Length: 269
Image 1 (cartoon, helix red, strand yellow):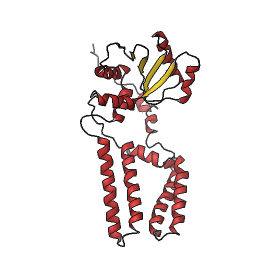
Image 2: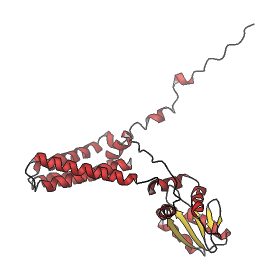
Image 3: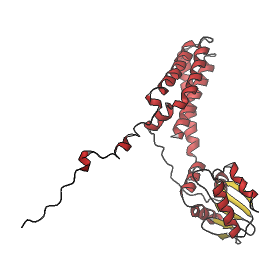
């Protein structure tokens, strides 16, 4: 979903920028629209091509998600397959070096204080004061743990691990996940009540600029669209969810549901 929105945003922005500047060079509106559409299409194709990558290697984002979804042993096994050092000890969630320990702690969310405290306790049991942990993101407040323990914590980003594995040709061959478009999620995000101020601001600015530029119709159209979106956020569409409340209705049993079911027939005497 995020990839679709980003690609659409890049396409629209490129079209608008090209449209605005070509009007100062070209006199034919047909030529202006043709050039703008061609540039926008090329930008969309370029974005899609770059994200797909080349060769058999998966993308960094796909790799990070896979490491977060799987247990730590998955990432440890990948590192082990590319390792050539002999003085290493591999565990289910860590790698012991002669003077440090590396933890595989990738997760979907952000590592907090309790997560770092748990890693510090494991490091103390392993007799290591130099600790590295592989993670996607860390809460800055979590580093307060170091004030109470005699260890040194250092994060290792999954992007760094991705590049190292790619350099040693040890990346997994992960299939690309085809993004799924959810109309309900799209409309809920578009008409969310919190978007009201953004739509109002952009709408007023576009309508005001329409009276100061020769491209009056262009600015009036997009300004009106923004103001209409602001109005829609004030309707029940802005409250959402779209159909999500129906599942709760299944928790209320009806009279028909409470009627006893027919029992199996028994042999009569």
